[in-house]
Length: 396
Image (tube, rainbow, N blue to C red; front, top):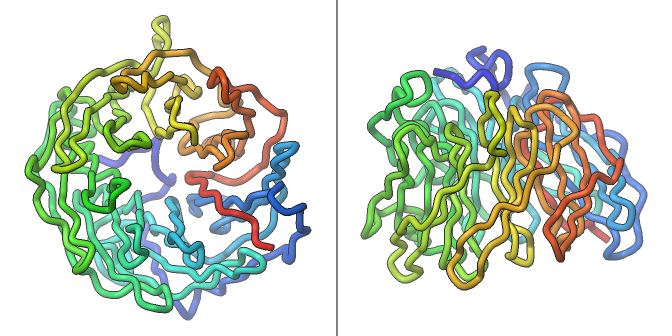
């Protein structure tokens, strides 16, 4: 089953991606330069089946929170989730479709990042080897890109060429099984894959089987090897979606989409194993509507956890106990929009930005680094169907 609240309106539609027909352009450049250290660049992944034209580029003023449009990379179909290489020279985007290059698969696109403007130039594309890819990560060396294919129920690894382009896949792991939600868990649905801070282990949330898959990552050959503990199970019907590591690498926080909960795991940094410690709701006790969780991030100082709620349309805020990783709920902040998908906290910890997918806007909140609370700045940007937000330093 496709997730109508989570996908482009015509996700099944056949969309052919041809390098010769993409016609990539970046408009409205060059952008005005801010004072050094006072601005960041923001890439915005979107669904393009509506009014969106591709990947949007904005400049965030770190004094006021103002977002200023700096350009648009056009002609890329459904670049829903993005990530940047460690050296900032390359950006990778999934193409969240179920037909790519005349095969049943999604795609992944690689771009060179102009070091003066932030402009993106398409390098190449590969089939993701599974339908509707929804997550992309890059290993710490920048040599491999990892993809989670939602409908395909698998994860794939691609090598990165010297020019930043992608080679043929070095590994694919197909998940098996199902769980108790007949509409959403009729089969495996890989929703993310993320490398740990040491680059030794990869963790993947399988929404369809209620498992967190654990792999040892062979960073030399781009292989995913079974972990000592191959997976850990969450409560049936939870639907694990995204995860985040604390700064020490000793704790993992998993957002469960279907139950709107967050689960805390203690992690063995040496062997990669996980042990469940706590599960809390991301919703107020008196909420009675329909909701699904979407995204999870830690504040840059590692003191707070934030989760997005679609339905309640809020950001849930938690404090982390540094002694044991336990969470304490602090409250909620309205996202001032509909269906908050992903969100991002700028590296300085000054602002939290929310991508409200169904109200076509990005809303800027100021983050209180003492209390963890959020306050609306009044700043926002109108972006069609925003999905993913990725910060990078402004180029000088």
